[in-house]
Amino acid sequence: MAKLLPDIHSPADLKSLTIEQLKQVCTELREAIVSNLSRTGGHFASNLGAVDLIVALHTVYDPPTDKIVFDVGHQCYAHKMLTGRLADFPTLRQYGGISGFLRREESPYDVYGAGHASTSISAAYGFAVARDLAGRNERVVAVIGDAGLTGGLAFEGLNNAGHSGRDFTVVLNDNAMSIAPNVGALARYLARLRTSGWYQHLERRTQEMLRRLPAGEIAARAADGLFKHSITNLVAPEQTGVIFEQMGFQYIGPLDGHDLPLLVDVFRQVRQMRGPVMVHLVTQKGKGYGPAEENARKYHAVTPFKPDAGMDTSKPSVPTYTSVFADTLVELAREDPAIVGITAAMPDGTGIAKLQKEFPDRAFDTGIAEEHAVCFAAGLA
Image (cartoon, rainbow, N blue to C red; front, side, top):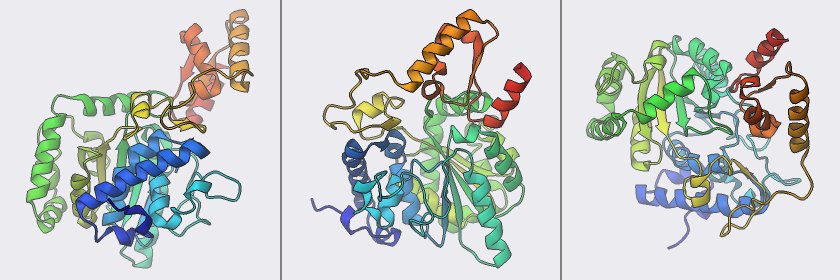
């Protein structure tokens, strides 16, 4: 079978492809991610999980006129390859090569550069307001993960944008797995949405309804508020997306984030809807690469490895700075009961995980909430 990806130079090249061909593009993107990152390293599992939704977005929307704003940016590799950077992808994160994050200087398709979580909603809302003030009509989409949504900045953006009534879409890429397990009330709420018994029924019925209704009817029903009663309240109105609806968003989901035909259909309808819309997609980190599917946390970011063998799990002969810090922190905590550890969703990367294991009541993970962590630390002190 002839490869399709080498002939994709911009999102416009996706629009003439059939669904089966788009599925093939997804497969080829995953193969390219595995092949290239096995040599260069980089953010691995999150990029594999985001392939389908990125292909669907680039098929339906018209970037760079339409603005797609990615949270953090380390799940953007498929976006880079679909926007003219496939030939440069082997240089990812190399000196003189392309960035591992979004970079405005690198491509007009990278409309917003970021490196931290929770920024996309506020930035995308800014794009939407600028559009309206200029009298333009492009569409604006923020793509944010479930971990990024736990950050306070994301809630500030949702609160401000939701009640504005402006045309603006948030795609929640819910893979239930950040660098470390999510913490906090919102993480528990999303977990209930994912695991409730009605999820599969909701997904199936939503697919049936969206595929029967013409775009015009969907848009009309969304405009007068009936859409959320037919879709989001289909099975469990007291649970489904109520937190987002209370913030002013029309909520759609949770949906299978790897069902490409469904994603294309949904985004086509959403692109015509008016007002703030939240599309909740459930995805799997590491999708398409067995070892990463089984251990997404281990494959969050990788160093060079052999694709057939997976990552080398042996411990390095020389201790890392993080391991030295972790050992020292535990030693000091044994001597001084007033010592505690605080991390913002990175217990392993910061060395706090070892303290968590030995002194669980003296180690605190605040989630992606650095401002809260600092004020919390001040109060503790």
